[in-house]
Image (cartoon, rainbow, N blue to C red; front, side, top):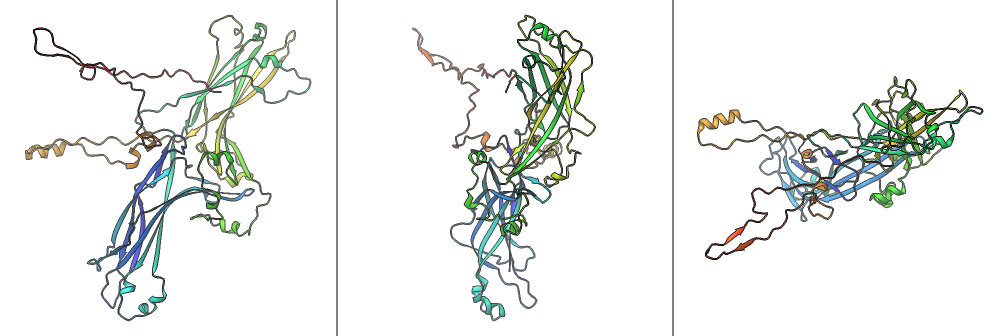
Length: 540
C-alpha cells in the first residue's frame, strides 16, 4: 500500500496591496489531497488498502536568509501558521472496490489560511540562493490497518510487531508573495506628485584655497522645490523630475549677479543587509520571538550552509553586523550632467515687488536602466546590480534616492571674475510593482427560450465566457472591505439624504388624506458626493 499527500493552492502566488500592515490579513485557500493505492503483487490479488487517518496539519511558514563574506550566514523565521485540517476523531480511509484500479483513491481536504499582511515579498539575495521564501507544509499522520488485521503468514507479518505503527508523510509547496502599490484597475494609473522643499542646499565640494566663492548669505537665500512621482513603476525606463528655483529676501543687486549654469542628476539604488533585525522593525511587526528562531528552532527548509554555521565549522573573517552597496541606475551612455546654454540670470526679477512669486522651472525625464553595467568585485556577494522595488525587510532592505546638483555662478562685484559653487541635495524615490489590469468581466448569457430554433440561434451568437486567470486576482483584498475588528467599512464620503418628515393633512370637506412624499420616496432626488480638491501637495 502506498499513501501520498499533495498540496493544491488555488494560486501559487499571493498578491498583497499597499503598505505592509500588521492589522491586515490575506486569504490563502486550496485543498490537500491524500491518495491511497493498493500494493501490486504477482502472487496474490490486490488487497484493500485501509488506514486510520489521525491528523493532517498544514503550516504556512516564511523565512529570510542572507549570506555575505563579512556578515556570514544569518536566518530569521518570519511567521509560522499551523492549522489542523482533520476532524477530531480518527477517520478510516480505504479503497474498497477500487483495489485493481490504476488510479488512486483520493480525498481532498479544503483549507483557508489567514496570512499576515505585513510580510515582506519573496525575493532572492546574493549568489548563494538565499533570500526571502514562503512555503506550505502538509503533514499527515496515520496508522495502516492492514498490518493489524493481517492473518496470513509472511515475513512482513512476522516483523510487524517490531515496526512503528504510526506513519507520517509530508509535502511542501512553494508560495510566491508579491506586493503591489495599488489594487488592479482598468484605468490608467497616474501616480500623484510629491514635492520636497529644499531651503538651503549645501555646497558639494570645497573650493580650492585662493579661489573666489559665492557668499554664504547669497546661497542661503536660494530655495528649491523638487517634484517627483509618489512611486515609479519598476518596469519604467525614465524618471520624470521637476525643479523650481527662486530666491527669497535677496537684494536686487545680488539677484542680478546670480545664475544657474548647469545641473546634474543621478538615480542611486542602495542595498543593505544586517545580521539581526533592527529594534524599530521588531517593534513595528510581530516577528516570532527568539525561542522560535534558529538555532533554537531550525528552519524547515534552511540553506545547506546553515548546518556548517550551527556547528561552528566556519567563522567569517572580519565579521560585522551589516554590509551595504550602492550603484547608479543611469545607462552607461548617460552622464547625468546637463549644461544650460546662454546667460541664465533667472533670479534677476525675484526682488521685484509682485504678489505671486515667480519660480524658474526645470523639467527633465531621466533615463534609467534595469541592470547597471558598473561592476565592483568587492560586492559580488550581493549578486548582479539589477533594479529592484523599494522594500524594507528584517535582514535585507532596498532604498532609492535621486541625487541632484545645481551649478551656480556669481559675478564678483567690481571685478570681472566669476565664482562658482555646486549645490547638492538628495530626494527619496520609491520604485514599486504595479498590478496588471484585472480580467475582463464575464460575458452575458442570453435568457432561456423554449423554441428550439431560438435556442440554437442564441447559442451560436452568445459570447463565450472569458477565462479568469487567476481567479484570486479578481477578488478585492479583505482589508479594503472590512476593518480590523471585522466590521464592514463604510464610505463616509457619500452623504445621506436629508430627512423630511411625512406630512399628512385632512382638509375640510375632503375625506382623503393628502401625503407629501419624503426624500426617500421622490423619484427625482439626486445624491451629491463631495470630493476634496487635489491641489498641489508639498512634503519636506
